[in-house]
Amino acid sequence: MNRFDYVRAGSVAEAIAAGAEPGAAYLAAGTNLVDLMKGGIARPERIVDITRLPDLDRIERLPDGATRIGALVRNSDLAHDPDFARSYPAVAEALLAGASAQLRNAATAAGNVLQRTRCQYFYDVASACNKRAPGSGCEAIGGVTRAHAVLGWSAHCIATNPSDFAVPLAALDAVVEIEGSAGRREVALEAFHRLPGDAPERETALEAGELVVALRLPPEAAGFAAHARYLKVRERTSYAFALVSAAVALRMEGSRIAEARIALGGVALKPWRCREAEAALADREATPEAFRATAEAALAGAEPSGDNAFKIELARRIVVRGLTLARAGTPERVPALPASPFAGAHHA
Amino acid sequence: MSIPITLTVNGIPRTVALEDPRVTLLDLLRERLDLTGSKKGCDRGQCGACTVLLDGRRVNACLALAVSHDGAHVTTIEGLARDGELHPVQAAFIAHDGFQCGFCTPGQIVSAVGLIQEGQAGDDPERIREGMSGNLCRCGAYAGITEAVATAHAAMAGASGLPGGYLREDAA
Image (tube, rainbow over all chains, first blue to last red):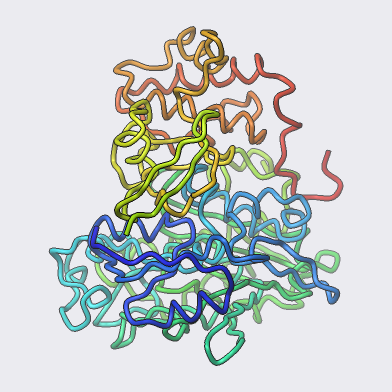
């Protein structure tokens, strides 16, 4: 790990001032940053510790029915907050499908959304990586690419975003609240993560020194609580990143779907919202044929970036399964194996 | 520049002057406080051998910078037994043969204490396995570990509330 200066911020204003210095990085739990520093992938010259910032560890229901998740709310506290889990069950399930209990106890909500890709070529400092070392090339292309992107990738980067949490947040139109030296602004979560294009080193909409202070779910997001699921396929059933995942949420009126929300994880460098597929389901009967057509639409434009064509059909099937399970209804309790498609006994 | 921090470790206040902010909580416990029960396995948050309770919650001590946790309460494997009496989780690991080589065991036991306090798993083996997935055992003692956690949960009944994780208003 490189040497760095340590600054403990007592206020958001102090944090932003310290974070605006070149080479600065914000530290919350450190579950991603410290790991990256140990590997020499991140080499900040100054660590700005934001763990003592007041009021950022709260979950607030706002008067209009929106919910604001403070940046420092721990993943496990959010997932186990009874009101939050009942209002946004797919978000709770996604949180509990991520990492391990130890990491969820430490990692923060904003840290989850900001976590870096798990592409093994990004992690291996001996490999060329345009994200880690801009202009050096992408050794993932032509390499071992089972876990890489099938949507939105470029000739410069084929990595995926590893967050589970961000997938239902994208489906539910979450907003990222940001503080910077120019004041406060908001960015839709869907637009927060950038596709690689020709500048994969630019990962988010954050400008230098800007700090995520909260994530906000809009009032209508709780309207999907009765029919929401998160499903995740991975190489083992726990403590692994997604090969493919899907957040599916339906607003039902009788047997008809009034509104559908679908987002995919593990397939692109951002949570992949499937708006055209959603629109095709609106005001339709919830039939297997409609679900299959929706899945085809959701993966329209998907292309393998290497040895990962299997992900495209896998994602279609996860969309169909997600829609089927969401239609059947949110389970009473988070399944013993959260988000596992192999734990369907509840709906059998 | 030396940074003094104070941690309450296993009930005892300990003040340490950090010469370098890079020191992890794990290295501070092992190298500065001679508490070598918490193990350095992967040192990257993947194996769980370094699991401690930080302000009552199980975390990976290898990924926590000590300087960021000034004022915290830490419980390590050394702090579980009371007056020579093993903690119920320690006793259950022995009774169920929940280890072979023993290297992952302190992390497994502290993690199990955290899991039981969290109250999410109860005595359901599937939920216990899921809740313990952040602790790897290269000897593969998982069957005994799962039984030990279920037994300890029963022995500590009342230590935690009803299992949580409900997603619907009409649920129990």
